[in-house]
Length: 84
Image 1 (cartoon, one colour):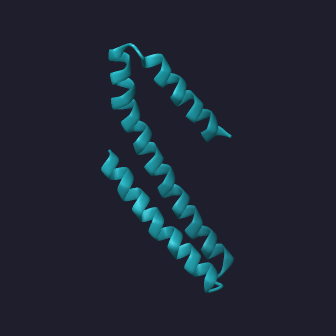
Image 2 (cartoon, one colour):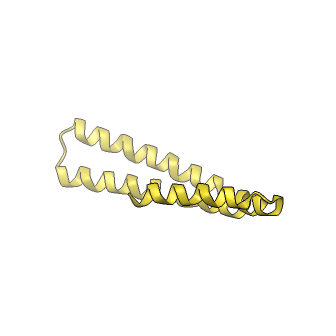
């Protein structure tokens, strides 16, 4: 899953650079906005993969070790930031 997240981040990096180039070239605003939205979508996918990785491994392991509640609190804190 980390590999997938890294792939999405690298793609987002390319999309972001394309957005910058489009702005510098004074391209049509709507086209630039579409490019930015594509970047955001890739970042969301990367974040989703990382959270899934965390839940499947870190949180699961923490519950086995008796520290699961702390991991749950971390995830809840992160979700509250995502909602804002």
